[in-house]
Image (cartoon, rainbow over all chains, first blue to last red; front, side):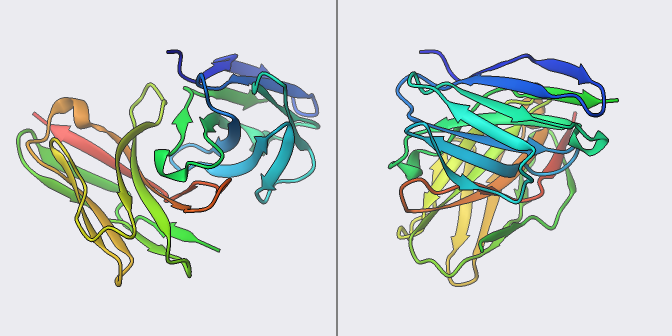
Length: 114
Length: 115
């Protein structure tokens, strides 16, 4: 049973560019959440997708957008990259109505903006 | 808004000894769950242990146990017989018992295990 798969694992982009990160959830999970984790800090919630709609959003600007596909996979898009967007981006999948089971995380995408 | 606080940025323990990591949280909800996640250098978050707020009994998973004090909003993790493989960043996390709730993390505690 595959866990959460994220691609790519590492990425280097130039300030002002756009980036797309991809996530395949754990088999059976219907909800995908994205987190930004700066070095040495806890993950910060970006947004959550369920039934192909953004259900919740954290304190992130509109430059951060996402999408969920019918097969539950998801993309995170960041436009007009800033140096401060350099971080580990984690994707987590879960069941929408089973909070007790927690989230299953991928290994993340390390984004470096230069 | 719910907040989770981990006041120990770093902790160290000798192999085979016991260590306790602290976590406090703030919420106005009565129904919620608490988790401890481990993040080794491989970066993947691994669920260590979970606690249901309505249960008074503290959760245990092999060498890992929690001390859950609901009134004090405290949720500490005890690791017994520490092993070198326990070295990692540990995060305390909170989620409401509601469909579609978001998982909120603390700042993390870096645990070092000395041989």
